[in-house]
Length: 515
Image 1 (cartoon, rainbow, N blue to C red):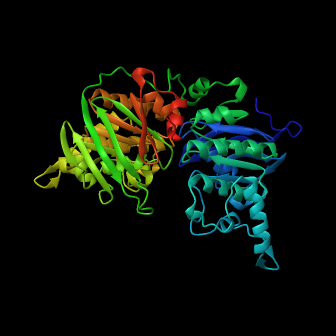
Image 2 (image 1 turned 90 degrees about the vertical axis):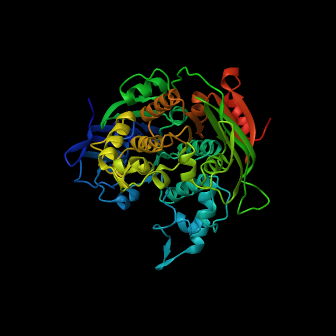
Image 3 (image 1 turned 90 degrees about the horizontal axis):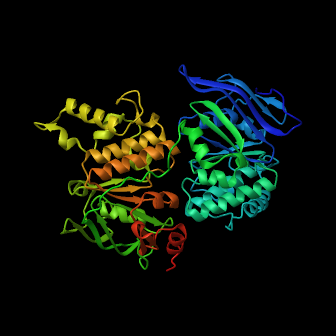
């Protein structure tokens, strides 16, 4: 039974009986969400579970009248008509895609839209003083006049938090805050959230990284299919139970390994070097050599900036102007590919780490996205055979279990997990023999991750060799047969699963440049 009154101010926020639909389809149905004062409350669920919709209602993106139910803040019912209203009440949300202006300074960004005004003018001295205080609070050692575009993602995330703190925040909502951060930046951010909690700020933490949820949360609420499944203290919840609540079934293991036969060396990268246009004295890649066997999963681990993505792009022919080296495919040596089309013809596939920017045309439908790299296989007398194109698209949708109304649904309207399946389907339709997957599960929920791992296993059984680049150490450990560790553009070490060499401690040491 949901109570309609707050017990003695124990809860700073309660959302009661929230229901919202879009064109008759319920996104949220009778959802109750209660947050205790001064806690870190994790909100988890698969993509499409309703997390973002609930937060948009709380923050005024979806104003009163577009949903039913109540929002009670500090014991008073609130009706927010826009984001400004919710921010005045102390609710601030930081989205996964940061909202900073890269050409502006830190100070300008922190007070953008919330300037300190004195006699009708911006009081820059007051802003400078306050900005330095805020940067100290979030533990960011940068000059306030530094242009934001010159800073890394981790520091930009801290600026977003400083910006929130400038608005006298009571409830800070962090939506996938570590999705694009390095391991070190993620740890620092989680420590900062702990510090903010000690200062009395209530945090709502949304993340697909369940290990982070278990490390930082006091309370965990699970949404599934637009409904509240359960809300429990972290001490009463295990990670396995959380997964089960999220997907509605038990996943035997997060990283399903399938027995497979590893053959002879199929693919080699030999002496790969890539020049750094910003620093001629330091290469992006320096004499990188790797080998991949038939039917093998090779992991590539390393800190952000270690050269992992540059290695994959160079192999795929996307850095030909700056790259030197050779590829050896089934014993035949080739110069590096001059462009992606040539790489595809030689059986090399690449799934980008940024599906929205580089992997998909979000305004186009599923069919067009799936077949765009394989249209040459669908020509008849120089004209695209639309029946064959539709057939291939339908087969791919079924093979990769893309959840959509039809092949003509706009890709931009799909969940992150289904978008990733379309990118995979597009790449596989070109019939690669070796497949580079760059952060294949970034920003997708645990159920979709499990499906991606199962798809990887299926591709493996088809004889495709797979190289997985991942920032998530449990993931790269959980699915790889061997792991190459990169550090500052070089291969720092190689670890083999079959020899029991792979541990998180060894990986971290090699990533940091140790032996």
